[in-house]
Length: 307
Ligand code: CP
Ligand code: NVA
Image 1 (cartoon, rainbow, N blue to C red):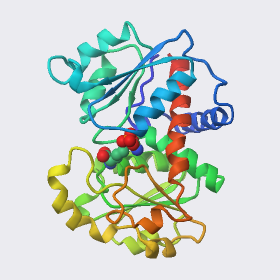
Image 2 (image 1 turned 30 degrees about the horizontal axis):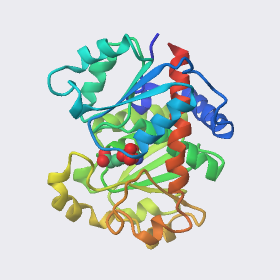
Image 3 (image 1 turned 90 degrees about the vertical axis):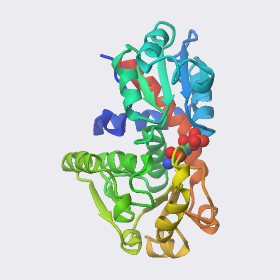
Image 4 (image 1 turned 180 degrees about the vertical axis):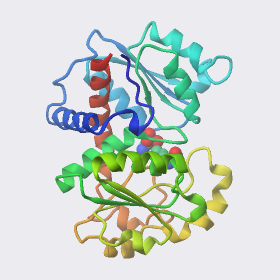
């Protein structure tokens, strides 16, 4: 049966571990897997800007022996004249998988419901599950494990990144803390899903408004832009509302002395994080950015094996 990856919890905890193990193997031996030899084509569609996702999917598909077809939505019929359903039916006759960065999660669901090829969420307003695979791989490399670690996210708790940490972090058995103002707390249905996953994995999700409490003893400190793509008109309000959640040296000093700092990038230095943290010795952001490549290759190989 075709499997899709639209949300972090579209896979089981065991499957998440399997994909991370495969990513680690492909990182050691980059050209070992030629699952897309032919070459088979993978469509990679962007409604929003991207550097890391675009490059890592294009390079990763080529590494696997395939051919990436990068489509800018504005230059296609999708989004204007054609529905995700009709686009899916056209693409499935010619491509091995569809990767899509878009706004509404419902568009991804419509795409997935109308195609026999795997659909991958390359970021939506609600989730960024590919980023989480790379982040978990990075944390595991630096800390030697995932289960039992405390990961603290600061800022917009209702963002795609926050929601993905809640689901994927808890799925990996981590204790995830999300520090945000109450009005930026994660969506209730996502919290309920994370709590359900936690009962299976031994992880946990804790929502906090106090950034000091969130930082205390944490193993991984995380933040993301306060102004996600599509939220630009809320910029002034967000800078005001989220100011207390900036990650600073003080935040790092409250965390475990061996704590690492991660950020999906792009970053607004001086806003969600100070430059001396993101460019400092505890930051592993460049490993994290590289790991997009290895994690997504593993994901594609794994999805194609299930089909
Ligand atoms: N982190 C991330 O998804 O970066 P891009 O927006 O550059 O793809
Ligand atoms: N939350 C950010 C992530 C960018 C990779 C956004 O959606 O713009």
